[in-house]
Length: 267
Image 1 (cartoon, rainbow, N blue to C red):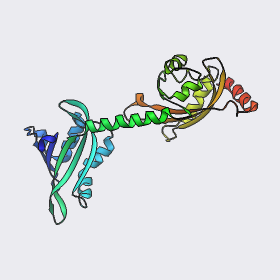
Image 2 (image 1 turned 135 degrees about the vertical axis):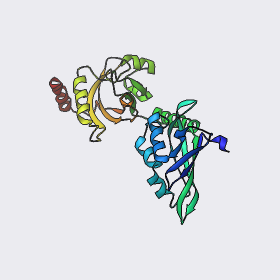
Image 3 (image 1 turned 180 degrees about the horizontal axis):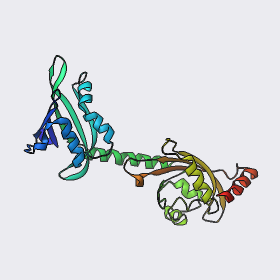
Image 4 (image 1 turned 90 degrees about the vertical axis):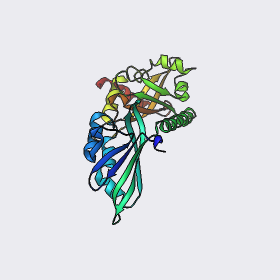
């Protein structure tokens, strides 16, 4: 059974002492002060920095002592580095092995790879999402909110909105970017309005803006743009915009259109 685990540790919760019992390791760093060992695992990259705050909280002696007062076993999944892979999902389980006057005294820590399970869950989730988005009546797309603002996904409704017969034709028409979707004369205003509404420090990640698009056949249409910025702890390159477009050409009044067109000169 032990062979199913990446690593197994013995932990004396009360004395802050820990040692590796599988695989057998003679390294001095894998025994001794538990909290210092956890810190070394972060510093050496053995525990990856992703979600560091929550991982640190779970592994802390304070949390273990408190949680194991009412439970015999607790677990948490996070990403670690192993000898054969630099980044994998693992499930760490802490199970009480001895109590003293009801309080947890010693425990066993097991670390098991769940990378395959997590990847399968992600794949299934992506398939379900793709099926749902493909059947939506509203146009929807996702683009990376940095540099060239490259479009990563677009549903068939967006293709129809732009009068294209294939996704390849649509991507070529808009040059694979969000900027290519917007009428060139509206672009400066649109970019300013989005940046003005998105405030990362304050937590406001939604925007609403109206602009024109140019269909493949040259027809100009007006759209409502509802966007949401999804930030990521993995880095700036992973900031994604999720955007819904709705054709409002026939519902905007001539006065509203004129006001938007006149405002372009100020950007």
